[in-house]
Length: 185
Image 1 (cartoon, rainbow, N blue to C red):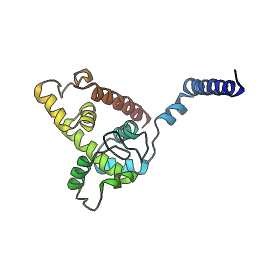
Image 2 (cartoon, one colour; image 1 turned 90 degrees about the vertical axis):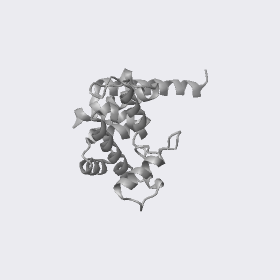
Image 3 (tube, one colour; image 1 turned 60 degrees about the horizontal axis):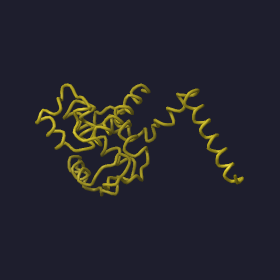
Image 4 (cartoon, rainbow, N blue to C red; image 1 turned 45 degrees about the vertical axis):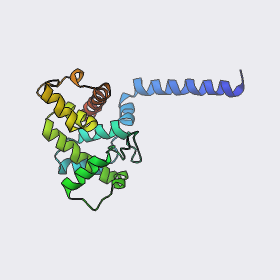
């Protein structure tokens, strides 16, 4: 075995032990690292302005971009809250912000402003964190279709009723993050 390979193995063992120690002996510190609250001034400002739970905004940011303002998804959604251009155009129209371009979503303030508006709008419409998350991921049309067809009961949402494995998984991740952020408030 070469010296380089042994050093790599030792480094990996050290990282595993350090990670294990952090998770089991310092869970609050591990959770603080995993569930960060960057961009707090914007989250607080816009969650208040659009009457949306800041814990839900943080959960969407965590799941969508892991707090990376430069994030770009496979479908071209951008920014902290991974908004697609059609949604940006709609929110810009609703907010009367025709002074902004889609690329402005790389600016954390605009990303949080637009994303918070959208999350608040969806929550007002569906009155459910699960359906808000599903609509953020799959679109309002899909969620309306599930409700109208009886596939999803909006009064008693069961994640297993959500059509599409990716959306159901996304909703589960949002709920996990949301529960953590709620506990941290």
